[in-house]
Image 1 (cartoon, helix red, strand yellow):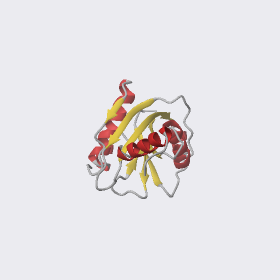
Image 2 (image 1 turned 90 degrees about the horizontal axis):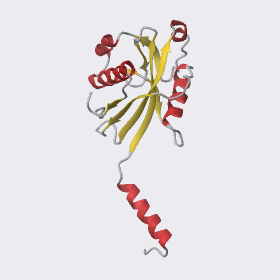
Image 3 (image 1 turned 180 degrees about the vertical axis):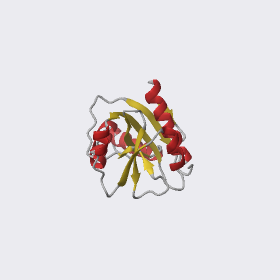
Image 4 (image 1 turned 30 degrees about the vertical axis):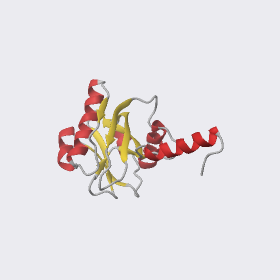
Length: 174
């Protein structure tokens, strides 16, 4: 069928072009530490292959990354991090057998939590069953290598003040 107007021709071309570009799942999270700068993570009840995670999740339609991180943080921990947003890292992963889309994530600085704030975390039992704070080196034995490498990159970004780009968080590379 032949378009009858410039607008129709452009619209069809735009739709066709949109089908050719890569698709991605977008997510956002927070990097929290205790007052001694030890990373805080939550234990997943639904992902045995990736058991320890940053606080955060997948973006909903119409959300921006900061909004996603704040919403997910409230849902998962009952915490509401203050702004303004401070981006520590951008994380990219290519699709693979486990997931058909690329993933793009933003990790924001959630700050340092007091012992009282950590004790007050109320986990969403549908998603997580434990919160843990450990020295960075102790996380290595508990996580797949790529997840530990990402955590290390985020920790370095916080420590140095230089944002990280972690571009090898590909599906299928544990």
